[in-house]
Figure (cartoon, protein in one colour):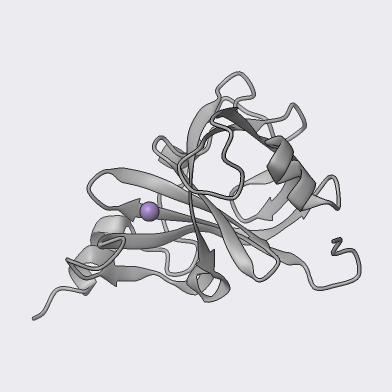
Length: 172
Ligand code: MN
């Protein structure tokens, strides 16, 4: 199914301090957010491939969430909207790309731009969580050796740091 004449597809990265700090990379597709957890976050350097563990699809509305998930709930911890914008798959058949384990796409975020790939490296599972992928920046004018997670640590929604979001949620 293609998406050529419909609304732009949402892309979001949420920095998530759970048991371990990671970045949740999410791409809207067919009413859900395809999701990967990236322990080290994205790199703009095409020679640096970042491990991305596929996780459960999330509801579209979650692309707007920033705040604290209470202890005991799924994903407990602090969530920051680290980047948000739209994405465009190179091939309109995203389902086929996901089955194949190779998705090429453009990002139009506030922090991340240009051409990227997600490539599955292990596991034969297709639409299930737990398979390992790599997030890779393609060589283009947005490629860089600048450390984007260090240079731009704040929320694109609230301009807050993760620690400020956590503190704001604490009872007085
Ligand atoms: Mn997470």
